[in-house]
Amino acid sequence: DGVIEVLSTNGDTHLGGDDFDQKIMNWMISEFKRQEGVDLSGDKMALQRLKEAAEKAKKELSSATTTNINLPFITATSEGPKHFDMNLTRAKFDELTHDLVEMTTVPVQNALKDAGITASELGQVLLVGGSTRIPAVQEKVKQLTGKEPSKNLNPDECVALGACIQGGKLAGDAGAGEILLLDVTPLSLSIETMGGVATRLIERNTTIPTKKSQIFSTAADNQTAVDINVVQGERQFARDNKSLGQFRLDGIPPARRGVPQIEVTFDIDANGIVNVSAKDLGTGKEQHITITSGSNMSDAEIDRAVKEAAEYEAQDKKRKEAIDAKNDADSFVFQTEKALEEVGDKLDPSDKANVEAELNNLKELANKADAENMTEEQVVELKAAQEKAMQSAQKLFEKMYENAQAGAQGAGAGPDMSNMNMGGMSGNAGSSGSSYGDDVVDGDYKEV
Image (cartoon, rainbow, N blue to C red; front, side, top):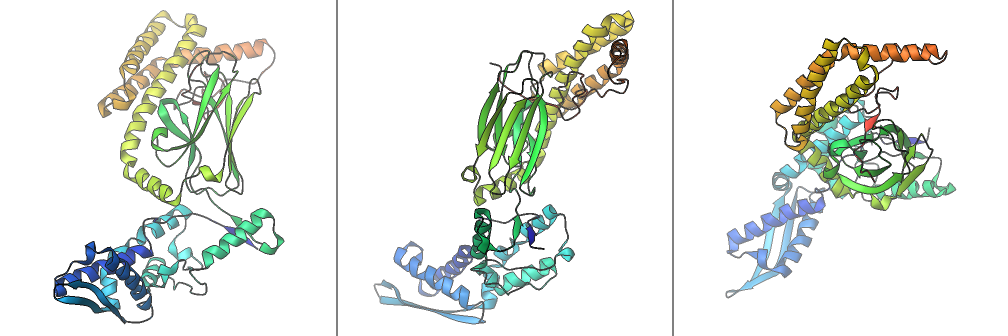
C-alpha cells in the first residue's frame, strides 16, 4: 500500500568495515615480524600500504577462498630491502574476525525485541553496507533470523537511494513516488521533574509524527514560574541524559503547590523536528521551544546512550526508588496537612492525635532523608512510615470526602464526589486532592 513503517532501529556505530581491515592489518604486522624480525607498526608509510592491501584482501575474500598479499619493498634493513608476500585464506580471515561477526548478534536481537516481533515473523532480510558482502556475516544473519538474506539490492547504494526518496517525499517532490515512510524516534524524550527525575513523554522507537501531552503541577507554594528542561536519552535521571533545550513559563498565579495545572506537550513532525510547549491551563499563558534535527544526537551518541542505560539500569532504578519514596512522602504530608486544616475539627480527638503523631514521624523521616544517598533500609523505613500514616489517616480522608459531597449537594450542583480519585495520594502526583488524575506530576521547578 506504499506505507513503510519503521518499527525499531538499532546498531553498533563502533563496528564497521574498518574494524575488519584492522584485524587483517594486525595479522600482517604480526606475521611479518615473526618471519622477518621487523616491526612495521611504527612505519607510517608501511602502515598506509598495509591498510590499503588489507581492504583489498577483505573484498577479494568475499568471492575467493584465498588471496595473495604482495607488497614489494615494504621496508628496508641493513641487510637490504624487505618484501611482503603472504597468502590469506578465507578460513583464516573468518578466524581473525570471528569476534566482530559475533558483535552483530546483540543489535539484531535488540531490534527484534524493540519492534515486538520474533525472527519467524520477518518477511524479508535485506543486506545494507559493504561489509554485508562478507560470507561469514551473511551466514550469521541467516543464523540469527532463520532466513536467507536477500541480495537483490546493492548494499553500497541502497541507503543513499532510500535517503533520496525520503528527502524527495519531505520536500513534496512528485518524482519520489507514492511512498510514505513512518520513521521512529531513536531515543526517549523527557522533561526534568522533582528530584531530577527524567519523566518520559515520548518513548524510544515511537512512530513519528507523534504528539503527547501530560499535566504537571508546581512543587512549592506560591510558585509563579516553572523552568522546563527537555532531555533525550534512556537514563532515569535528567542529568545523565542530553539536554536539548530549556525554557521558562512564568506568570502563573500564586497558589498552593499542586493546584496549578501545567500542560506540557511534545509534538514531533515528519522531519523529526520537536516542538515542546508548556501551557498554564488556568491563565492560558503558553511558552514553547523548537528543537531541530541539528540538536539531536549522532548515531554514536545514541548508541552510547542506549548502552549506558543498560549498564546503569540497576543503579538508576535504586536511586529513582529512593527519590520516588521521598517525593511520595512529601506529597502525602502535604495532602494530609491540607485535609487536617479543612476537616480536622470533625475528627475524634484521639483519631486526630494519632494522625498528627504518625504524620510528624513521617515528616521527620522525610526531612532527614537525602534522596541521593539513601540506603535500602532507609527507603523501606520511609515507605513503612507512609503506609502507617495512610492507615491512620483513613478516617480523616473519609471526612474530607463527606465534606466535599455535602458541599456539592448543598450548592445543588456538581457531580457525586463519593468516588473521587485522590490523585497524589500515591506516586508523584501533586493534585492536592482535586480530580486532576493520576497523571499529574510534581515538577521540580525554580521559584522566581
